Length: 62
Image 1 (cartoon, rainbow, N blue to C red):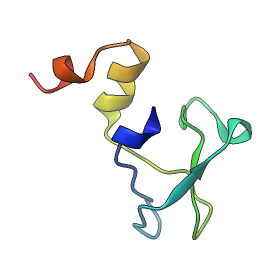
Image 2 (image 1 turned 60 degrees about the vertical axis):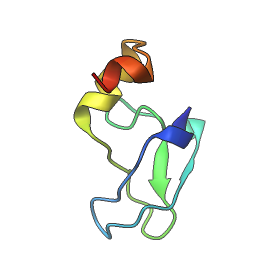
Image 3 (image 1 turned 180 degrees about the vertical axis):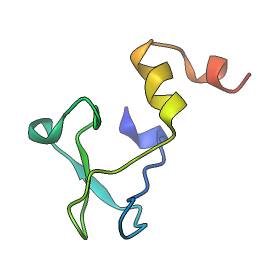
């Protein structure tokens, strides 16, 4: 599911990450962490909200 989401590190601005069930939190629902500095990755606030609400990708593009 995370293959279509563009994550960006807020600290080093990297875009490479790993996901882990142990890193899932309310602020990081996908458990994505930067492979360089180990910071929680961020994405657009609205896309996380839409995915949690189970909207399809076509509805997001409207």
